[in-house]
Image (cartoon, rainbow over all chains, first blue to last red; front, side, top):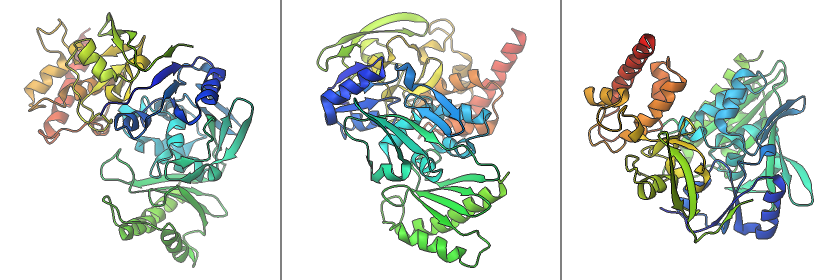
Length: 275
Length: 170
């Protein structure tokens, strides 16, 4: 339960981070809050040659809000974003979802981008980014690109990030007027990994329901309003399409039932919250 | 840009319970092990070593965090507070939280206690008027296999009251 040896670089600028990634490729890992990575190091599931610490890079530590959305830098801790979202009306989904992320003690260190980069299929923040239709800003030494969350998650803990790319920030679209947002989760204990997590956005036209914890990646689907005659069938079809599997936490059947029940509850709450 | 090589030990200086201290750590050394093995502050306990049990919780720059999920080299220059700092006179008498846990049987074997005390210390400093529900939510980040938690909550609420009275008199 101790990490294998690695070199450690405390980067002071974005350019230093990118140079390290360029030099070491898949041997390098970025460390920010370390709340997902250090357990992997301790259990030796990850054995990087070099850890590049980005927490001293000032340009990565900001939350910038604009009409395009709320851009959260790679160094922003979950507790910091939760605090920000509590004082600003533009991220109502995150206000509801972040308290489900680990515990106070891990949110004080863990970063938003770190959890998204880790891409655990049951994690809350990737699910929120996907459900809101957010994006990620990646950069390597010569080029920067922005990709939608829908193209970022490609498998269990696998993403579209290249080995030499840094995720500089993620951007959550700001709440739309007249839309409602809700989050729900079932886990063994509060703070454990979700067995099923649901995030819902309700607008005048319809519903977007995101589901985490079932498939290898978080998913999102447009659904009719709960009053519509085809709602139950559509939700049931969604639950089956996620291809749930039995594991030691829950059976596939239980997970499908949770998608149907928790999905409906979360959608109904989102509708009630429409402003 | 400091690059610390894997197999060497590097100086790490931090403030531990208000005192400046320094030791040597490999990049892979966890803060929990640095505190215990290098600085000799064995009050911080090491349980699961992947952030789940909460026994190693300390205050890093004033907020509760898992010492087993922080690297010693990341904590260079930080203010770290551990259970050793809760006593008002360096270990002769108990602090308010500790005394309350003793009085209400908030511990049995005591393995999880240092982490719980440090979480409460940080939490009650930031939110002195926290509700019982908020306290319970915060304590969900700790595992205790002896008490069943009821006496921990009782001790925490009692300590919260005592700390409020102390502030009112101060």
